[in-house]
Image (cartoon, rainbow, N blue to C red; front, top):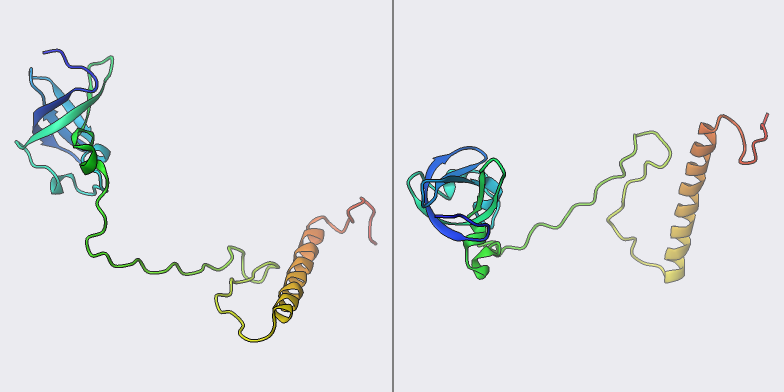
Length: 160
């Protein structure tokens, strides 16, 4: 029997490793299903999905010049089955928590993201507070950058 890319066949699982499963195809040839091609969901342990001597349906993905046959179980499924399954419990995921800025402590610019809104005040008051905070942060950053330049101004003149 001549194997060709795209063919869907049945074969028997002859071996399971950490990275995939070996499947004996009709005609006595053996191909491998990589762990990423076992199922349409994340596969941590292949033995959770297949067992040795199990008959499985596979699709031929490729045949190398050396004769190695690359197979896929998930691409041999019907298109509706190829989609990852939704979470069974249908619980909403926990909201993401804000992360602090990735700057060393004690250095300019080490500002933590504030998740709490400051309640009260008009829009203009909130904008004023935001502008003041922003100006302070920009001032700190400018001082830090100028300090790294070794005491020279933007125009190359010495300050001292």
